[in-house]
Image (tube, rainbow, N blue to C red; front, side, top):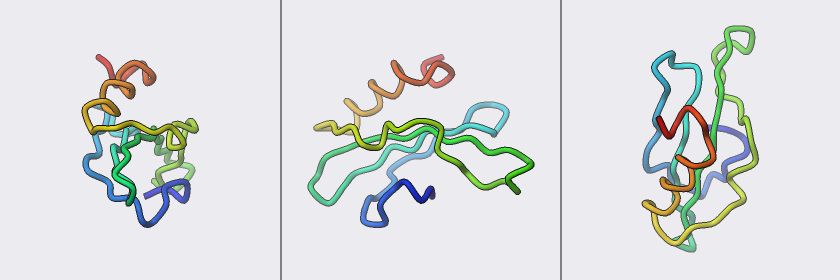
Length: 79
């Protein structure tokens, strides 16, 4: 999990691209709002997942709403 994601947030799902070097995490916060974040993993970073954007600050009312937003925002994810 990235340093950008608060430890109180629960990751519900993490989906990787076919190359396994990008992923999107869908999470829920303690206030029952939902969000997502995109990460990358590069060999020079020793395989550590690094945030790509600042999507985690956005808030959605449901997991499905967050998933739909992630599909629109992250080019490879909506394919």
